[in-house]
Amino acid sequence: MRLKKPMLVIMITLICLFILSISSYAIDEDSCTDIVLGKKVTPDGSIVTSHTCDGQYDSRINIIPAADHEAGTMAPVYKGIIRAYPQFFDTHPYMRSYGTMKKLGEIPEVPHTYKIFSIAYPMANEHQVLIGETTLGNETECSPNLEEAIMYIEQLEIFGLQRAKTARECIKIMGELAEEYGYADRGECLTVTDSQEAWVFEIYAVGPLWTKKSGKPGAVWCAQRVPDDHITVVPNMSRIAQIDPSDTENFICSDNYMDVAIELGLYDPDIGEPFIWNFAYSNAKNKSRDGNWIRAWRVYSLLAPSGNWKMEHAPYYPFSVKAEKTVSFQDVIAMFRDTMIGTPYDMTEDPDWYVKVASGPDRGKWMKSSLASPQVDVYWRSLLDIEYFRPMGRYYCSYFFVSQARDWLPNEIGGVLWFGLDNPENSPFVPLYVGVEKVPESWKILDRKKFDKNSAWWAFGSVDDQVNHLYGHLKPMLDEVLMPMQQEMYDMQDTIEQTALQLYEKDPELAKKFLTDYTASQMKKAESTYWDLFERFVFELNNNTIRVIY
Image (cartoon, rainbow, N blue to C red; front, side, top):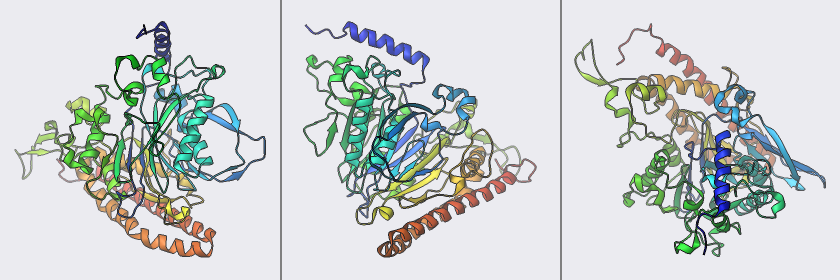
């Protein structure tokens, strides 16, 4: 008779609890959002993935060029890439558990590596392979053996992007490397696209008792394809449910996809219930994960409203849904700016924001304070007892992007990341083409320990902070500048790409230089505009100015 909780499982659980007590592994995650569109959803056939990197992460753009490598060359494997900015996490209590960037080992290098765009979570290569990331968390039994496993998700992304020309190839490379060298991270999801397909890739560690000498795979992973006419969203919650590894058109899985769950006591095949991937390995049904569920509810409600979605049913939502209307990358950008204004979860309508006017023509009336904001921090929430609903546009985001992959254009032009810094609600999305060879210096530097006008991140982060201090007054002023600037970038896209294509037909290097110069000009323009706004808002926030603001 099979024991449901064998002694091995009890031992694993005790070890996991010990690991969790001394490490930073979080079972609940609430920090990133990916939205994915199949090619038949968009008006032009683009395939879209996206990513908001919410939290304090390295937002410096690092373009690692393509390279040839001699036989016998070894590639380093690192921990800490996601927070590699200078010294910050040595002094910030929340970050100390991550330590500095540390070399964990080496693996054989391949003869040729492709150009990639690296950042906290590397996001693109020269072949239009584009990756969004969102952390899932995992059941405690899936905690890794940190003495043996060396592959963190961001390092897998680097290797996948450097070695793959397609999304499928990238997924297989990352999965196989994690199996061979051991996966050392939390449960993670990567939304991987190319100009033909969109995929959701999920990966977990196999428990703290794994060793390389065991001969067993050091990771368990599965990827599911997003149908061409579907959309999906991954808001820090596992979306893959029932899987069919024999359907190789739509699934790519490690051979141990079910065995690990059985071994760790996360699934019992004898009870007669189907194997559900996300209920076995992730905490998808955790009742405390409203911040994840609400984002799934919001995206599905906007793009497939006839589903009459209920937020409490989010753990059981289908993996993807057929879009009920055409959805553009601009629509995804609008969703990334969404703060649920006008919904039952609109935090600006909390009654405690309303004040009785003490003087002036509106004396005696109850009016919404200009302090009312959807970007409420813990101080306002504690002071006014505001119920918090996690929006997609979030004030402490590090960077974000919405990408396009297009098969009718050369890779250099067809792949574009609409990229930005800090809060997507209050910052521009600037086109960053995969043909770009370099970006302005100010977009490559960041030290969070000090204010720095030479760093682009500080321009956008400072204006966002100002706006959120007096949202009702400053947000309209910001939008008067931001929205026309953003629309101009949209309107320029066709002209820029047609010009780049004409240059490409003469000489691809001319096209790359043109796109590099164009992206640099838009980055510099956006940064300069925000420094001007910063100075303007210093005046608006000065309490010696004479005006009436409620």
